[in-house]
Length: 433
Image 1 (cartoon, helix red, strand yellow):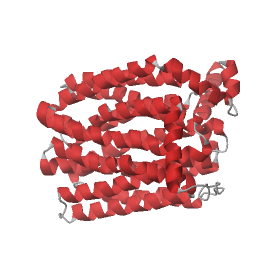
Image 2 (cartoon, helix red, strand yellow; image 1 turned 45 degrees about the vertical axis):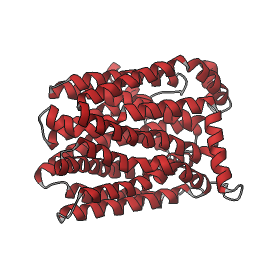
Image 3 (tube, one colour; image 1 turned 30 degrees about the vertical axis):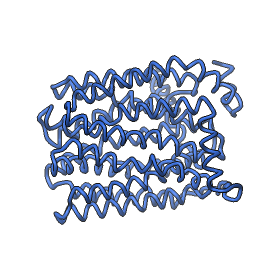
Image 4 (cartoon, rainbow, N blue to C red; image 1 turned 90 degrees about the vertical axis):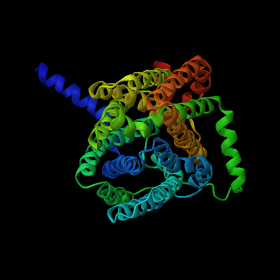
């Protein structure tokens, strides 16, 4: 009897963790994304390895990362205005279709042996432009497919869960395929995988959300978004902290090929397993966030997770043993994911609906916009002082940033609690907490 009761409790906990899947539209999106993201991670690993194989340059690894993500820094704020104006589902469909075309072009050039580094850079810039539209539109789209606002944080966490589940599977497959047949097939499979998410978006039944396209001039709407985001201390604090950590800490990913080949003396399989280890940690972080009943206390969790992330980076930079490095990447991936997803949940929970697209464009700007700048700096530093010292410096900055953020948590809490108390389902959690 006790065994049965324990299993019932476990099933109830699992049901709670997966509660956003009860919504049909999110469930369809969840399954489509699960397939597509495996292909995305295969392409990410294959592209990094291809660049390093062709050039052997840490700087060019950083440059490709910069080319992929810096357009988000420049263009996301403008894309955010259109996300608040237009149908978000169709914006995501257009972005995913363009990304599919990019993957097929990359596959064709690689499989025919015509690929050059400048091709990769141009196609990376094109993909970065797509991301500038896709990420804020996709993040804002969650509100359209989650019927109860209380489950929005869970939906965001579950989306991160499949992102990191794909990060676990995709790099492992990519490492094997690269070693056997080369990078081109990884790009082709990624192109095919976009069909899953595009079809899922087409079969959804989404109510047309109201738009504000007739309310104001474009520049006025853009200015309104900036003023709103940076005048509210809660949003401003999260965005600045996100930008600092994205700049200093997240570029460790683009230096992974150097660690796999030169530090740990491995090959593409080693790279795939290292990224997969980070993915396992991130997966655990996403599960942790999905299991949370309330967003209250998330600021403290973000600060602690970033300290863990920074310490992990410092320790990883000193490791020369594959198993030790893989173990440390579990903590790096977990800390990074809790920080990123937690920041997203806070922003999504407190933002006004008519400004959601613009605020999430600033999230994209701080996350994917600052990371490429960091990648460029990290690539240059790795050529000058080595990848280990570069990673160590990034870890130190992350720890210092988290300490500063933690010192301002009281101000953040005072700003954010009144907003939560106004929301349906949140006021009850506040009174109980």
